[in-house]
Image (cartoon, rainbow, N blue to C red; front, side):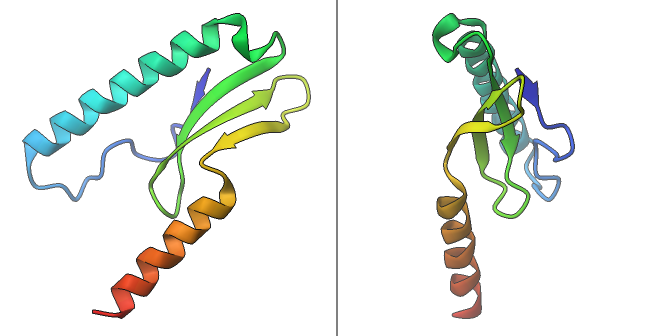
Amino acid sequence: MRIDQSIAAVDLNFNSSRDSVQIQSENREIIQAVRAVSASVQLGENNELTFSLDRHSRRPVIKIINRQTNEVVQQIPNEQILRLAEDLKLSGETDK
């Protein structure tokens, strides 16, 4: 399992420490789940589960990656959904 460390797991703009603690707790639960799945043989011997945050939408992204080729076997949510969410967010901001 790999976790992308280049993006902060917590939004530093949060004012409430309670919100920050809740987000950190949720992130720990997700990481534990990813580790459990990655340790199982269900992904296949050559595959690895990765967890990261999309740089634009800040949404969690889970990928199954072939360790030998670094090819993305599957991604949830896929790139099209991430870009659609980003476009919808941007159009909502311009409507205000």
